[in-house]
Image 1 (cartoon, rainbow, N blue to C red):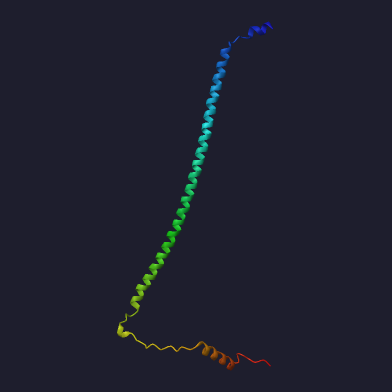
Image 2: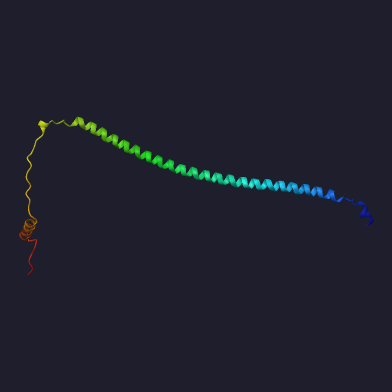
Length: 135
């Protein structure tokens, strides 16, 4: 026991507490930095996620606009073809004048009663053997 007492050095109580306080302070600083980094990472993640959603919506809108523009181009080209064919047809046909027209007299329409019309079809049905008598 005497030998152990020689090698043991008496350390005052306060000098033991200073390294523990420093180590505790260092751990608190690292914990704060770690928590701040985690919060920063999650914030940037959600911001990038939101930006990606906005970009997807913008891309979808642009795709629809491109499709509409392509349809408009098709309609315009069809309309141009129609007008070109109309312009070409002007040269093919002769322009008429009032003296070239032939006027016909309007024929008066003969009005027939519904009874007479049905009666005639009934008589025609008998003559064509459409309506046959039984045995």
